[in-house]
Length: 435
Image (cartoon, rainbow, N blue to C red; front, top):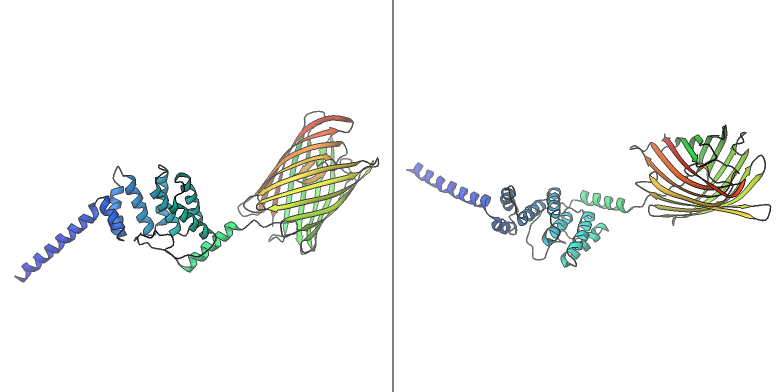
């Protein structure tokens, strides 16, 4: 008799369990919605899982499903679901708000800020979206807020929040790194790798009269506690001749913010000056401004050239602007002036950049034979010039190698035919290996 009673009791219990279970699993959207907002997110989640796998799923079910993922702490999965919904509809206020909140739950403040900005384009002047945007903005700024700071006042939804100290520290560091400007580098900035070898090759093609000119160089850079030393060998092949120039650049440190540039070149070839000497003093201010002043002396077989040089540079965020001038006094009381403007945008770091270089005027340093901004050969053949070139440098994944390319167009006057101009196009490639 006792066994019969036990079987009856077990049968009643099992019937109740299956009835409740069946109600949870096969319930409709309204039931799932009510359970979710009663805080029974797991039960609602299980019901919605079956509903979203049906051939046709309405948008409300998709939004609620993505929201339960977010409330359970599956922020990445929820973000993917919200993105899928937003790809088909842009004017649903609820999905925008839920998507922004999901990234606020995950402490992805920058993503939440971007989403709120996009939402306000489609849902104009919405108070809730504006409130969420303000919280995201404050989060990006690194401020701390209560865990429930972004909840609606009338919401009873429970969610799993990860608020560990380690996560907060990581987020703060990521935000700091994103806001940090690129390090400004000068030729005397301390490098981890103190040695580098640079190889360059370039070609210049003219539209008339002259044959193509090829130039090349190889240089070695050594950084010391006192500054950098760069010996270089330049080679030029033009007008059927081949010439070599020995070149030496020094960048000595002077004091905090001050360093110098000193250059000496020697050649026995008539493609280069016999001697050239140059120098500049640079001052790099913490505000991003850089000033320099110096001079050049170039000794050709037929005459000597003396020039005064000066420049001003400015770092603004990831951009660098530099204006340099050459002032050359002449014996007939005339003064030849040329200018050069460089605009450079740095990419992921100071070794990856692109830039535009423009020049105009009279100068013995016409930079006809160059690699980027490095003068390879001077000549007195050309008097006036207008120059425009583009440069691009990128590094390998391990940053041991750097590749720089430059393409330029020049318009130049011929000294033996004043007022007559010709054009040239030049292109060069430089490879640098650091060790």
